[in-house]
Image 1: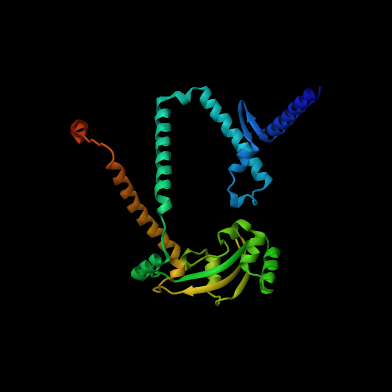
Image 2: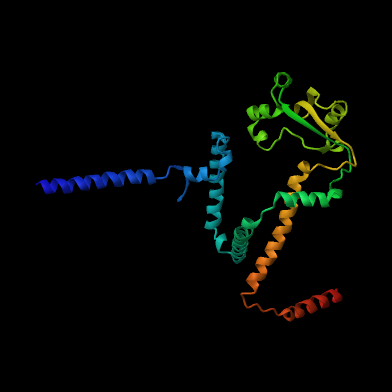
Length: 288
């Protein structure tokens, strides 16, 4: 009797464990189209981690609706047999090949793609002529508000000591993420007329606003001016130099990697097989 109770106890523990385990494994289904399902996990997987706190419920709902629309169209395409089309099969094969090649190169080359600070400095010193300004430039901080009242309130906060960065972080987190409140150095000629007219009159560090434009009400602070013919500082062009050096290294690593792969494989090429085609096309052109 005691032995049977022990066995029954183990069975009950097993059932409870299985039910708990299954409850954890059961995905939360957000949407379904036919047999296709969209789970909560799949939705969250589509959101970049650094933006997860900024994505609202409305944006998630919009994603779900777009998924439903896409799935409905996809299933209809399959129902019509478009997936069996030789042309589609060739396109899918090409896409798969391109994707695998991209992943291979990313795996093989990107891990080695490092640029040192000294390389950046050396490039800058050796290529200063390519960083000379060809026009007068200006840099300013700014925020664009929906109403004059909001713009005045923001201007007052700046006067009390808050920075454009702090206010952008509070009011426009996505803008702050990419320093969207900082214009960087821009040519006067690239500015809209209203901004160009006001900024030309401002002194460095002067605060101005609200300035009404078709985009909204600007609050501006002039940071710096640089004349035509001046050389951009290393800080200004650092990311540009890093990108240039990475492209050069990427090209070098790519050719080195490709040559190493070719050396391991038997490769044959018969370009004469193309000659008939080339001759035929020439004849056709002459006849026309």
